[in-house]
Length: 110
Image 1 (cartoon, rainbow, N blue to C red):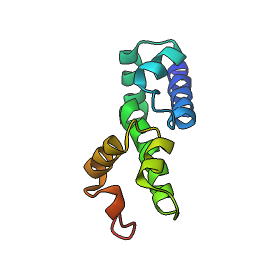
Image 2: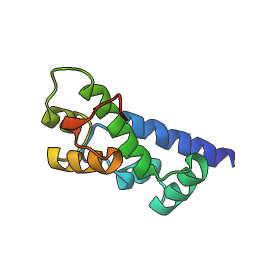
Image 3: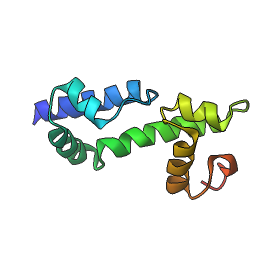
């Protein structure tokens, strides 16, 4: 059990370090940890009650909101800085999570 806890803590640390990289995904995370993707998913979900992908997306969206609340960043700049492959994909993921586009996001409502 201790090994599994170390594994998921390391997975979380890697995600928080790599989330800005658009080529980083759950497969590359499993490769870095030298474990099977299904094992990673199972252990991560058991510990954090969400999939590694959900956690990765959450890291990206938290950073995006931080940048949205800071003047001077375009949606395109935010998308790429947060590890999304394109501004369109960023907007799609953002809208699915928050029910509004990044350009219309109001932190007082969400």
